[in-house]
Amino acid sequence: TTTTNHLSVPSDDAEAENKPAKQKRRQRSSRIMDDSLGTVSWMRIGTTLRSIIIVGFPEMLCCLVEPVISCAETVYLGRLSSTYLGATAATTAFFALVSELCCQLSVMAAAAVARDTARTRRVAFEAKRTMDATVAMAVVFGIITTVAVLVANHFGAWTMQGLDPNVANGVGQYVVVRALGITAFMISNACEGAFLGLRDAVTPLRLWTVNGIVSLAMLGSLWFVGGPASMNLANVAFATTSGQVVGAACFLWGLHSRSLIGFQMPQWTYGKKVLSHVSVLLAGAIARMTTYNGMTAAAVTFGIESAAAHKIAFEAYWFLSFLTEPSFTAGNVLMANVVSVSVKKARQMCLILVGFAALIGVFLLFGTNVWMSTTLFTSDQAVLSVLALIAPWLACKVFFSSIVYSIEGVIIGLGRERYLASIHVMNCGIMLAWGAFATKHAVGVSALWSVMAGYQVLRLVEHSIYFATQKVLVKEHARMNEKVV
Image: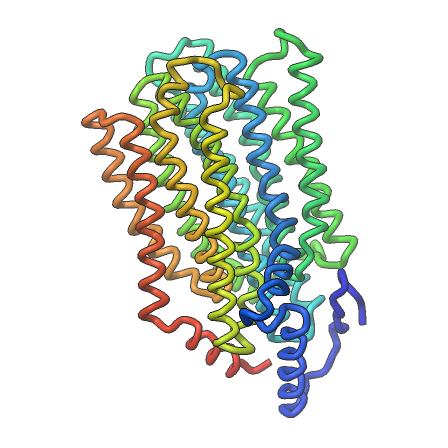
């Protein structure tokens, strides 16, 4: 037996158990859930919240690394001019899409490893085979995405009309250099999932911190050491890409040192399992982030000031939305175990997760107000006046997305990714139609953000109806308890 971060891992050659042993283990698992996660009753909310924070808080800090680097880039560009802010608005939304795709690999790996360990004692064996397949998938997706970005950039996909040729050329260079870090970033996210699936959120935090320190140190050297000669978009992108490459190397080393990856050709059985889960998650993520890219495409048609304000507001939303990560990650990682024990406990866990997310959302309302009134990102009064119009809608969007994000973590933890993907695809069509209308009639960036806030409300209503009508927890409990271990 080996030990992995306080988790007892039996050796790979453990023999299958007989039925009485399975029943005893299930009873023992129930007692463990009562002791470590709490009975999820209202009398032990403190214990449950502690479990949520232990699992989710380090992951929240991990997820904030990329938004923090992106915000540092925005501060840097804002010091140059509002033109640079507006010119890079489209690239911000696109690389947020890429980041979201990378995160799905982490979510998928975490959910797969958590489900495997909930149903089998061969933790080390299953995790290693799953991660071999996941990392291979990350490399393939990364290469395909990089090539697609380079081709799209060649045809000027992110260049605004009427831009100064020098600025347009800088945007193109920025995209090329950032594209070179996509594969590394996907590998890091895939590796992160293995640790999260085993309820180790501290190791990924340490490794993501290395990534962030490298990128921020290079950005700082550009600003304080390089001087005006180094202030260009390509150098900014190089700082971010360098951190991603170093981070990927650290994550691979971390998995290898814990014997969680074999660097072997993935077996088709595990590759098929990974592909089936990740394809659904990617479909949902692409649909969701295509919505935001469509809204950004509409915003940049309203002028450079509106584009710059949209970029700052989008950065605010991207950063603040990750502060609800504890409830999302807890739902993703813990729900499979909780629902296998009791439907009542699972229902109570859901209520606590949503309540916790709503409480965070209330605090984020104040954070949104501070963010939108600061001159940290720009001192251009024209841009600040547009931000003042966006602020109320951004606050609503952040609050409702906090709740929605928590519910979607539960949905993924219950293995209902297909439902989630179908909803996002349907909503994407609705939002893109609105974006086309907004562009055609020049409704303004404030109206654009009002509908983006409504997008979160729509998702909340859809998920509420789904849980109310489909009896998801009851069905998942029955399915998991009839599984043959």
